[in-house]
Each structure stands twice: as structure tokens, then as C-alpha cells.
Length: 465
Image 1 (tube, rainbow, N blue to C red):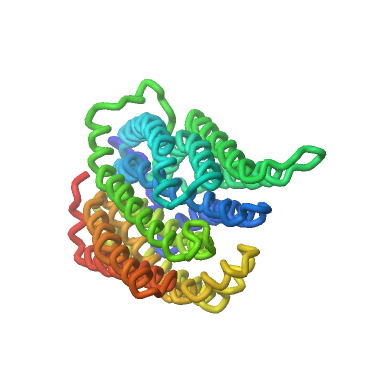
Image 2 (tube, rainbow, N blue to C red; image 1 turned 90 degrees about the vertical axis):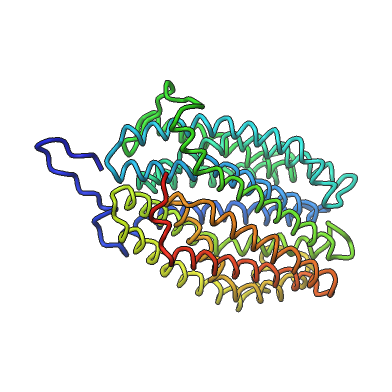
């Protein structure tokens, strides 16, 4: 991917010149493996929580809420990661390795500061979130402590995600896969040992789950920094380049700013949606309805796996193609990723539709949770294609640096469709979780339609970064 000098032949870039279908698959599969491992860790934590005697529903709620907070953290880190991928891929598409390295180092500095800020936010907001979800007494104390300990790990997560974003912009999907895969496996091993105990050592219960997560995240951050210190894909850490000002930083923030705002507003809408869910069951937040929602969202995460993976492939291919001035290649890459991911989502939705009760029984021992979640989940299964396409088209546009339109789409979908429809159908009309999940399905359908329209128009190819 280097720029040819006088008298030299240009080095072929397989991301720009290789067969598109095969190139998409080669880029997507490592990210898919990484996503699968991360998903299994989250699913396993939920499974563990459902087997903690005496507080299984409270534990499931705590783990689920921590997952929502972790999702917020990852979206806020999009302030850095989105701009990093777009700029690194553009520079490498143009053959400018020095500029790509500068962006990567600036991104790591920004991510370190962002990680500390996110932890401070989580620490302060944990009691507030507990009150908003009607938690009291022991239940509130368990959840607040869980969130605050879990939040420490997000400092390392910010650095890990920024480094992974830079590597993906360079077309290196395998190294982030290996690092994050090891993080996931370590999480499972440590959490299992600490939850159940053994060898004469008492189990830690729910504290074991969060401790395992914290250990794994810190180890992952240290490992990915070590990899970049050694140099990979032409990217190498240079601490003298860790600065928080300058044109490179402004460019990262200019692209990532709308993505981070998008993430924060999306999460606020999702939390408001959780508040609606918490009021659907007769027993408040600790009810089987809330636990069923958490389990259903965890299972639906299967659809996110290929969507995020193919979205990452789209962002890399589009960024490098636009950096090389290959607009038609960029458009074709976005189309190919959407087609491939759409077929995968159709298969996943079919499996969900057929096996919803079986999946819920595997995830939770409570018959009430299974009964509350099976039908809503079956209905939601029919909307997995628009869910996947909304993620892929968002990644495609962000890979081009067009981050404002996805922000607008998310605001429309969540605040004008999901929240009012969920309250009316779920609470006012009394359809409960089914009504809320119908509203959620309507939201993703509206977003997918708007994003597809934006992509089809093609004006995003001229986005300045």
C-alpha cells in the first residue's frame, strides 16, 4: 500500500484491485469471528447470571444493564474510532503511510482521555440509572456496585477499540480478532472460576462475573498496545505523537463527533425504552418481563455479528476506494456487503422464528421468562433483515466520512417511532412486551429505509474528510 516513488512501480493494493466478492468475505470473516467470540462472552455472562441462586432475575438485570452501559461506552468511543477508520483508510488508499500513523497515534491519545471520562460518567450515573429503573434496597446496591466495577474496564476498552479501528482502516482484520478473541476467552475462564469457586474456595456469585470482565478488558488493552509497539500493518506506536491538538485531532473529531453524538442520543433513547420495559410487568423492574427483554436482546445480538463484520468490511473498502479516487469501487463495495449480509440476516431470522422458545429455555431457568419472551421474539424475528441493513449502511456511510445522516436516521427512528409507539402499544394499549418489540421493529425498518435511500443517491462519495 505504499506510494510509488520516481522510477518505481506502484504496489498493487488487493483491497482496491481484488475481486470484490472475495475481498469482502476476506475482510469480514475475521471481524465475524471476533464478534462471535464477544457475543458468546455476553451470552455466557447472561447464562451465568440466570444460575445464581436466590437473585437470578436481579443478576440477569444487572448484567443486562451493564451490557447497555457498555454499549453506550463503545458508541461514545465512536468519537475516536469512526474518524480513525475513515482517515487511516483514506490515507492508506492514497499511499500515505506517515499520515496514517499520525492519525493512529493521535487516536490512541484521544481514546485514553475518553476512557477516563466515560468511567467518571458511569461512576456518577450508576445510582441515577438504578433509581430510574425503580431499583431499591439490595437490588440497587448490587447493580450500582456492578456498574462501577465494570466501568473501570472501559478505560482499557477505549484504547483497544481505537487501535482496532486503525488496524481495520489498514485492512488488517485478523490482529483485532486475535486480541479481542483472547479477551473473550479470558473473560469466560476467569468469570466461571470466580462465580462457582472450587478447590475449597467459595464462589463470588455475581461479583465473579464483573471481576472476570474487568481482568479480561485490562489484559486486552495491554496486549493491543504491545502489538502496536512492535509494529503491525505499517502502524506503530510513537508516544511523541500522542497529542490532543492539531489538524489531525480536529479531523478525527470532526468525523467522529456526529457518530459519538449519535451514540449518546441513541443510548439515551434505548435507556428510555428500558424504562418503558421496566413498567410493563406487575412486579416492576425485577419482573420476568424485564428479564425476558434482556434475554431476547442478548439472543438477537446474533444478527449484529455479521452486520457489524460486514459493516467493518464496507467501511474499510469504501474509505480506501475513496482515498484512491475510485468512486465506483466504493459504491460497489457498499452494495456487495449489503447483499451478503442481507442473506445471512434472512437465515438468522428464520432460525429465530422457528426456535424462539427453545432459545429462551436454554438461556433462563424461569418458566415465566420463557413465556413472556417467546412470542415477542418470534415477531421480532421477521425484522432481522432491516436490522442488519441499517447497521451495514450506517457503517458504509461512516466509512466515507458521512456521519451526520446516520445520526438523523437514528433520532427519527428512536424518538419519533420506537419510544412513542412502545409506550402506546405496550403500556396504554396493554400489549406488553409484544407491543414494545413491535415498536422496536418499526424503528429499525424506518432507519433501514432512510439509510438505503441515502446510500442509493450516491452523493456521500463526495464527502470531505
